[in-house]
Length: 324
Image (cartoon, rainbow, N blue to C red):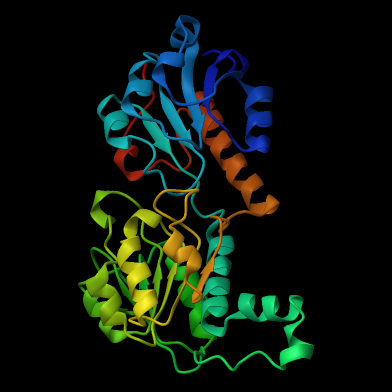
């Protein structure tokens, strides 16, 4: 078995600096500015056995690296990686679950409080000097008191959010493709049924075709005029035009969003809506958590090449073993 320092690992595009440093210290790191397969040199094709990425890894890039064994994705969501194509070619794919769970759950709670109680607008009122000139900030119509929460995507992060909501006194229900075994929360077999039963909907669903625009006009109408919608999952799971229309018309009360369908581009209608709290995809963006994600990404590579197993394989490739 080759020493780790002799194994080529490709970094396509930007990557967390802590991860880059560890990869450079541990492996023979190669870099290309994007995941464009045409940027792969013959030397890379001959030496690269791993990819470490937080950018898209599509089929052409995978095919351009005949010795590729593993793609280590930075983040829990790995919809930017063609995992089905990788699995078909016997290539392991890993992600970084657990280490960012609590940080993202905190962000979801912050978005909910900000959206319901209008805290960013109240701060703006103070900073603009309106308090001494115009008096107190207007009373907020929404409150967290008496709310019923629904979670779309009761995975690790969804469960952590549920614990926080329970502390706030909110009953919790959820929708997944299937009920979660042993869950104490009420299950609804459709997203519309869940939205009808709650007034606070928090989306933690993964991206992909199965969830594309799942939060649509029908779901938002079911959530109702007191409804607050929060998204810390993927922007692709929301019909953003329908969401903007629902906010403008009063179909729902407010929204708190950390993710968008075409990042970093945010629809103008959402930017202009006064009843939104918008963040630039910062759910896990603390030094502490991003360093932990970077360590897990690199540890997956090291474990694969030194011990023959991945630490956190994704479901599509969990069965794979190293190539002989």
